[in-house]
Length: 62
Image 1: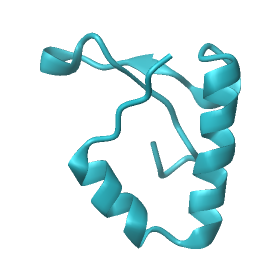
Image 2: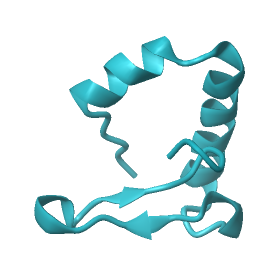
Image 3: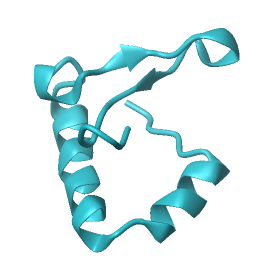
Image 4: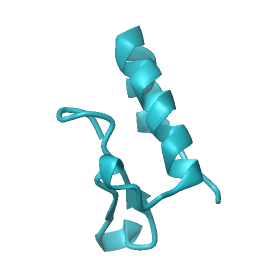
């Protein structure tokens, strides 16, 4: 599986609180092991990104 980070994501990620960064890293590991894990709330993107997927880190962050 290949995980792609947009330039905007990288910029925004750098500004996140360390607590959220750690949560994001934990969720990414879950995603790598099982992309359809219910805890991730994985969903397919639409439009020009329709071949990509997104998952939630917490209620306010995906």
